Image 1: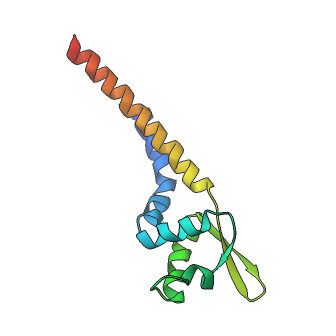
Image 2 (image 1 turned 45 degrees about the vertical axis):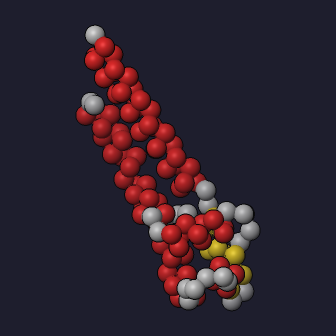
Length: 115
């Protein structure tokens, strides 16, 4: 792989690392799944059916928020959390690029081996 191509991948990987880290936890994945419906949820709503406390849910939401996956909207005294698909779409684009590069590398290897 050329240095230019490698640094291009590194540049795209760097800002996406927090997204991978945020999604690397089952509780946070569960919160994202609840928020994917498009409707904002309060911390109370997100805590329903969970064995976790409001404080624990809040901590997980802050991780998701710092990665840009969710954002909060203040409604009176309550914060409601909404899903933002853009960071995940960017990660998908990055993974598609890496996958394409692997496919090309494997194709070159196959051509080399079959000569």
